[in-house]
Image (cartoon, rainbow, N blue to C red; front, side, top):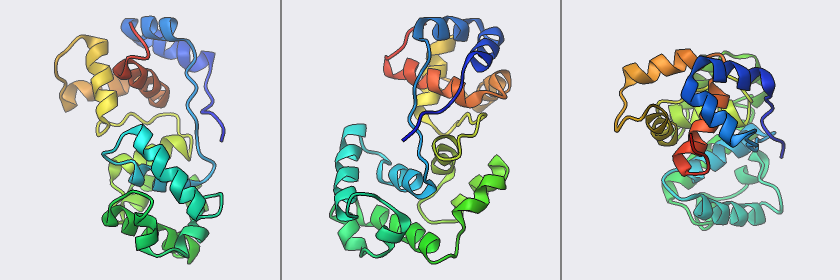
Length: 205
Protein backbone atom coordinates (compact mmCIF):
# COMPACT_ATOMS: atom_id res chain seq x y z
CA UNK A 1 0.00 0.00 0.00
CA UNK A 2 1.39 3.39 -1.06
CA UNK A 3 0.68 6.95 0.06
CA UNK A 4 -1.07 9.76 -1.80
CA UNK A 5 1.67 11.83 -3.41
CA UNK A 6 1.72 15.60 -3.00
CA UNK A 7 4.26 18.17 -1.97
CA UNK A 8 5.32 21.81 -1.91
CA UNK A 9 3.28 22.85 -4.96
CA UNK A 10 -0.02 21.79 -3.43
CA UNK A 11 0.84 23.03 0.06
CA UNK A 12 1.97 26.44 -1.22
CA UNK A 13 -1.14 26.84 -3.37
CA UNK A 14 -3.52 26.03 -0.52
CA UNK A 15 -1.56 28.24 1.89
CA UNK A 16 -1.89 31.17 -0.51
CA UNK A 17 -5.58 30.47 -1.07
CA UNK A 18 -6.64 30.76 2.57
CA UNK A 19 -4.93 32.17 5.66
CA UNK A 20 -6.46 29.65 8.07
CA UNK A 21 -5.44 26.80 5.77
CA UNK A 22 -1.93 28.23 5.71
CA UNK A 23 -1.72 28.05 9.50
CA UNK A 24 -3.23 24.57 9.50
CA UNK A 25 -0.66 23.32 7.00
CA UNK A 26 2.22 24.98 8.87
CA UNK A 27 1.12 23.45 12.17
CA UNK A 28 0.48 20.01 10.70
CA UNK A 29 3.20 19.43 8.11
CA UNK A 30 2.89 16.74 5.49
CA UNK A 31 0.00 14.29 5.90
CA UNK A 32 0.52 10.70 4.82
CA UNK A 33 -2.68 9.03 3.61
CA UNK A 34 -2.55 5.43 2.46
CA UNK A 35 -3.97 4.57 -0.94
CA UNK A 36 -5.09 1.40 -2.67
CA UNK A 37 -3.61 -0.05 -5.85
CA UNK A 38 -6.83 -1.95 -6.43
CA UNK A 39 -10.22 -0.32 -7.14
CA UNK A 40 -12.19 -3.25 -5.78
CA UNK A 41 -10.37 -3.23 -2.44
CA UNK A 42 -11.04 0.49 -2.06
CA UNK A 43 -14.74 0.24 -2.91
CA UNK A 44 -15.30 -2.90 -0.83
CA UNK A 45 -13.56 -1.30 2.15
CA UNK A 46 -15.68 1.84 1.79
CA UNK A 47 -18.89 -0.19 1.67
CA UNK A 48 -17.86 -2.32 4.64
CA UNK A 49 -16.88 0.80 6.57
CA UNK A 50 -20.15 2.68 6.13
CA UNK A 51 -21.50 3.83 9.52
CA UNK A 52 -18.95 1.90 11.60
CA UNK A 53 -15.76 2.98 13.33
CA UNK A 54 -12.33 2.63 11.82
CA UNK A 55 -11.43 0.05 14.45
CA UNK A 56 -14.52 -2.03 13.62
CA UNK A 57 -13.63 -1.84 9.92
CA UNK A 58 -10.13 -3.14 10.66
CA UNK A 59 -11.68 -6.21 12.31
CA UNK A 60 -14.09 -6.82 9.43
CA UNK A 61 -11.35 -6.39 6.85
CA UNK A 62 -8.98 -8.71 8.70
CA UNK A 63 -11.64 -11.42 8.73
CA UNK A 64 -12.45 -10.91 5.04
CA UNK A 65 -8.74 -11.03 4.19
CA UNK A 66 -8.47 -14.34 6.03
CA UNK A 67 -11.52 -15.68 4.24
CA UNK A 68 -9.92 -14.74 0.91
CA UNK A 69 -6.68 -16.53 1.76
CA UNK A 70 -4.56 -13.48 2.50
CA UNK A 71 -5.63 -10.92 -0.11
CA UNK A 72 -9.03 -9.42 -0.89
CA UNK A 73 -9.60 -9.46 -4.65
CA UNK A 74 -12.72 -9.32 -6.80
CA UNK A 75 -12.02 -12.81 -8.08
CA UNK A 76 -11.74 -14.31 -4.60
CA UNK A 77 -14.78 -12.49 -3.23
CA UNK A 78 -16.81 -13.54 -6.27
CA UNK A 79 -16.26 -17.16 -5.20
CA UNK A 80 -17.80 -16.50 -1.76
CA UNK A 81 -21.45 -16.65 -0.78
CA UNK A 82 -23.05 -13.48 0.61
CA UNK A 83 -23.50 -15.24 3.94
CA UNK A 84 -19.77 -15.96 4.13
CA UNK A 85 -19.01 -12.29 3.53
CA UNK A 86 -21.60 -11.31 6.14
CA UNK A 87 -19.91 -13.58 8.68
CA UNK A 88 -16.93 -11.18 8.68
CA UNK A 89 -19.05 -8.78 10.72
CA UNK A 90 -21.21 -6.78 8.33
CA UNK A 91 -24.87 -6.62 7.40
CA UNK A 92 -26.31 -8.84 4.68
CA UNK A 93 -26.98 -5.73 2.60
CA UNK A 94 -23.32 -4.72 2.66
CA UNK A 95 -22.27 -8.30 1.91
CA UNK A 96 -24.62 -8.43 -1.07
CA UNK A 97 -23.36 -5.10 -2.40
CA UNK A 98 -19.72 -6.16 -2.14
CA UNK A 99 -20.51 -9.53 -3.73
CA UNK A 100 -22.39 -7.86 -6.61
CA UNK A 101 -19.48 -5.52 -7.39
CA UNK A 102 -17.01 -8.41 -7.18
CA UNK A 103 -19.14 -10.47 -9.57
CA UNK A 104 -19.26 -7.62 -12.09
CA UNK A 105 -15.49 -7.21 -12.03
CA UNK A 106 -14.61 -10.89 -11.99
CA UNK A 107 -17.18 -11.67 -14.69
CA UNK A 108 -15.95 -8.94 -17.02
CA UNK A 109 -19.16 -6.89 -16.86
CA UNK A 110 -17.24 -3.93 -15.48
CA UNK A 111 -13.65 -3.08 -16.42
CA UNK A 112 -11.83 -1.49 -13.51
CA UNK A 113 -9.09 -0.27 -15.85
CA UNK A 114 -11.62 1.71 -17.90
CA UNK A 115 -12.19 4.26 -15.15
CA UNK A 116 -8.60 5.49 -15.38
CA UNK A 117 -9.42 7.45 -18.52
CA UNK A 118 -12.74 8.84 -17.26
CA UNK A 119 -13.42 12.27 -15.81
CA UNK A 120 -14.19 12.44 -12.09
CA UNK A 121 -17.88 12.90 -12.83
CA UNK A 122 -18.00 9.93 -15.18
CA UNK A 123 -16.26 7.72 -12.61
CA UNK A 124 -18.83 8.70 -10.00
CA UNK A 125 -21.65 7.96 -12.44
CA UNK A 126 -20.20 4.58 -13.44
CA UNK A 127 -19.61 3.40 -9.89
CA UNK A 128 -22.88 4.79 -8.57
CA UNK A 129 -24.74 2.52 -10.98
CA UNK A 130 -23.98 -0.33 -8.57
CA UNK A 131 -26.18 -0.93 -5.53
CA UNK A 132 -24.48 0.23 -2.34
CA UNK A 133 -22.11 2.61 -4.11
CA UNK A 134 -23.30 6.17 -3.70
CA UNK A 135 -21.57 9.41 -4.54
CA UNK A 136 -19.52 9.45 -1.32
CA UNK A 137 -18.17 5.92 -1.87
CA UNK A 138 -17.34 6.78 -5.48
CA UNK A 139 -15.58 9.98 -4.41
CA UNK A 140 -13.50 8.04 -1.88
CA UNK A 141 -12.51 5.71 -4.74
CA UNK A 142 -11.45 8.77 -6.73
CA UNK A 143 -9.12 9.75 -3.90
CA UNK A 144 -7.81 6.50 -2.52
CA UNK A 145 -7.78 4.25 -5.60
CA UNK A 146 -7.45 6.61 -8.57
CA UNK A 147 -5.42 9.27 -6.71
CA UNK A 148 -7.37 12.15 -8.27
CA UNK A 149 -6.09 15.56 -7.08
CA UNK A 150 -9.26 17.64 -6.83
CA UNK A 151 -11.89 15.78 -4.80
CA UNK A 152 -13.72 17.81 -2.15
CA UNK A 153 -16.74 15.83 -1.00
CA UNK A 154 -19.75 17.65 0.43
CA UNK A 155 -21.14 14.25 1.41
CA UNK A 156 -18.24 13.62 3.78
CA UNK A 157 -19.09 14.66 7.32
CA UNK A 158 -15.44 14.87 8.35
CA UNK A 159 -14.61 17.34 5.60
CA UNK A 160 -17.62 19.49 6.48
CA UNK A 161 -16.71 19.40 10.19
CA UNK A 162 -13.13 20.33 9.38
CA UNK A 163 -14.26 23.22 7.21
CA UNK A 164 -16.55 24.49 9.98
CA UNK A 165 -13.58 24.48 12.36
CA UNK A 166 -11.41 26.17 9.73
CA UNK A 167 -13.80 29.07 9.25
CA UNK A 168 -15.08 29.14 12.85
CA UNK A 169 -18.70 28.40 12.04
CA UNK A 170 -21.23 26.17 13.83
CA UNK A 171 -22.80 25.17 10.52
CA UNK A 172 -22.11 25.17 6.82
CA UNK A 173 -24.38 25.06 3.79
CA UNK A 174 -23.74 23.93 0.23
CA UNK A 175 -23.22 27.49 -1.01
CA UNK A 176 -20.37 28.21 1.41
CA UNK A 177 -18.91 24.76 0.81
CA UNK A 178 -18.79 25.49 -2.93
CA UNK A 179 -16.94 28.74 -2.29
CA UNK A 180 -14.17 26.79 -0.56
CA UNK A 181 -14.24 24.00 -3.15
CA UNK A 182 -13.41 26.60 -5.80
CA UNK A 183 -10.85 28.27 -3.55
CA UNK A 184 -8.98 24.99 -2.96
CA UNK A 185 -9.26 23.73 -6.56
CA UNK A 186 -7.30 22.13 -8.25
CA UNK A 187 -5.96 20.59 -5.02
CA UNK A 188 -9.19 19.79 -3.20
CA UNK A 189 -7.98 16.32 -2.28
CA UNK A 190 -5.03 17.63 -0.30
CA UNK A 191 -7.28 20.23 1.34
CA UNK A 192 -9.54 17.34 2.34
CA UNK A 193 -6.64 15.60 4.09
CA UNK A 194 -6.00 18.66 6.25
CA UNK A 195 -9.68 19.15 7.04
CA UNK A 196 -10.03 15.50 8.06
CA UNK A 197 -7.07 15.95 10.39
CA UNK A 198 -8.59 19.13 11.83
CA UNK A 199 -12.00 17.48 12.33
CA UNK A 200 -10.50 14.50 14.14
CA UNK A 201 -8.36 16.57 16.46
CA UNK A 202 -5.10 15.38 14.92
CA UNK A 203 -4.35 18.92 13.77
CA UNK A 204 -4.99 22.47 15.00
CA UNK A 205 -5.06 25.91 13.43
